[in-house]
Image 1 (cartoon, helix red, strand yellow):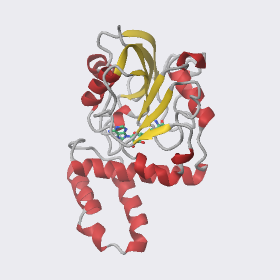
Image 2: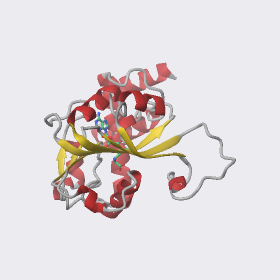
Image 3: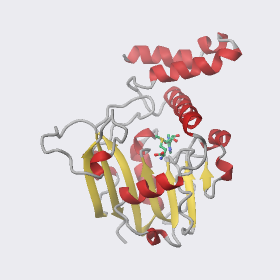
Image 4: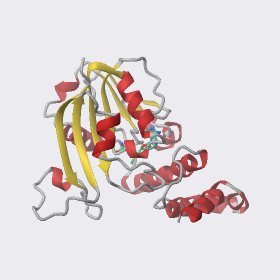
Amino acid sequence: MASFRHLAERALLGPVARVVPAQLQPFFQRALAAAVRHLPVLDPTSPASVAVKNQAELSFWRDWLGRHGTAPATEYYRSFMMAMGGIADQDFFTGRVCVDLGCGPSGSLTWLHNAKAAIGVDPLAESYRQFGIDAHPMLYLACGAERLPFPTGYVDVVFSMNSLDHTDDVPAVCREIRRVLKPGGHFIGSLNLNEPPTATEPWMLTEELLAEHLFAGWRRQFYKVRPKLEHEPDPYRYFHEEPPPDLPSDGPQALWCRYQAVP
Ligand SMILES: C[S@@+](CC[C@H](N)C(=O)[O-])C[C@H]1O[C@@H](n2cnc3c(N)ncnc32)[C@H](O)[C@@H]1O
């Protein structure tokens, strides 16, 4: 598996890609990105892994937005991001600096009109301009969450929705979240647990890893772990209804949580 992945990475970036005729390049890149998407990753921080990941992310969004349209999914994100933090009232965010790490191109913070600032961070933000993000009522920063361009203690709310396991270096991202959050600020997450690494999700998150690198010393305000349903229209169904008691407790799960950085 690993050696096939290496070959696929080299092909994607190297000689094979160069001899494919220009008009076939989009199909070639898409097919190869799809092929490597589910293979194990050797070193998520290597430039080859990051390049493959970026190709696969872009081809995912091109396909998704091609089918669903590029209008911002404002109501979807409002209800998901409030629910994943156990927040009932949008006033929670009034006047606050809110940052969404790994925001994607679908206008994840376009609902946050009452915030002081609504800023999406994504290393692919430059490429996402092809999907019309310039028209969204939020700001985008083109950078990885491993090095955030904010002063220390500047941000009131950090969101991460299905993105932490997509980053290049989870411990580095956790350090940055802890650095930029104000004392008393909040982290709100929907985090996928126990999923073996793939090209686009090169890290496997566990409750233990998060407790050590992200939540240490913080105040837990909301914490819900549920099985994640890979082959259902709503993988997060059991956040809205009780799971059956006989469901196995291992396998892919998701964590919805809100923590407060202790002042
Ligand atoms: C599955 S998408 C999630 C998008 C959005 N949060 C949502 O749930 O619809 C994961 C996003 O993480 C971004 N990502 C990948 N590496 C990252 C990094 N190092 N720092 C921040 N975001 C990253 C990808 O570019 C992609 O847009």
